[in-house]
Length: 94
Image 1 (spheres, one colour):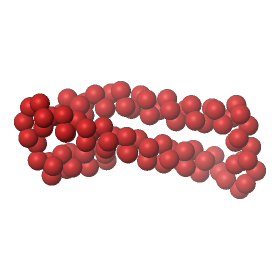
Image 2: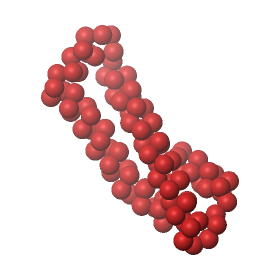
Image 3: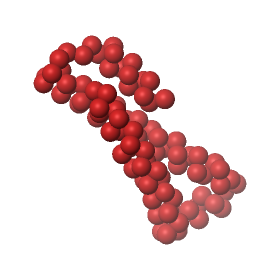
Image 4: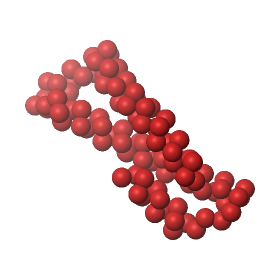
């Protein structure tokens, strides 16, 4: 389970940053950002809202992947108590 978290740390961070950059650049290319910019929204608020939305998607995906990893570990290797799994997931999510 620790090996899975280390893989999430290296690959996941890179994918998260690239996905956030892609969301903002796609909105600029398609012109959808114009609808946001005409409102009194600062650049910080715009980027922070995109960051929070992507962070929510990331946490849901992380929880689903970690749940499958926990089940896989229980089947193939040894039982890991669900309280330890949730604790490690919560700690890693921070």
